[in-house]
Image 1: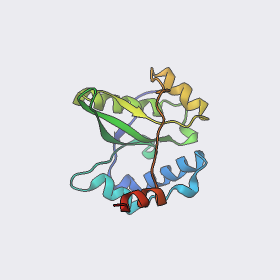
Image 2 (image 1 turned 90 degrees about the vertical axis):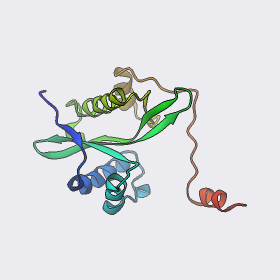
Image 3 (image 1 turned 180 degrees about the horizontal axis):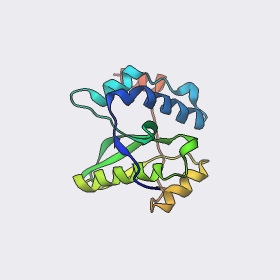
Image 4 (image 1 turned 45 degrees about the vertical axis):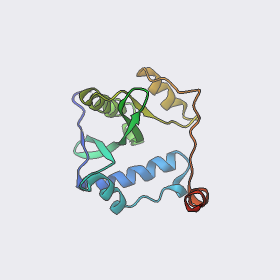
Length: 161
């Protein structure tokens, strides 16, 4: 495979990116939980001081993959890192190097900015993704469990005195 076109997301990419997020939610067996709108993603990516960033992968001028990410901070390392929220490549393009190219671009972003790490979560049942990530040298954080507050629990805690 020759040069893989990976670039920063542009405003005109947002509708396709929302569609990719919906495809990812379907793949992860959670489509009903995906409520992302074009307006929400556009605002998050392109407000004056964005907290979300995105890269896309193109094949023949069409966006077929994306990486959505934001900065985190490691108090142990004393510097930022990238948290990859979503990495998705359409099934028809998997195995073509686009996932690797997207992750390579994020690794370059880390190196260029002095960020200490690139991290993400993967579903336990997604053996193909886990194998792919391990092939890149990524290591699972087996001693860590992700916790999340949403919906009623989040509102209850946020409304408590």
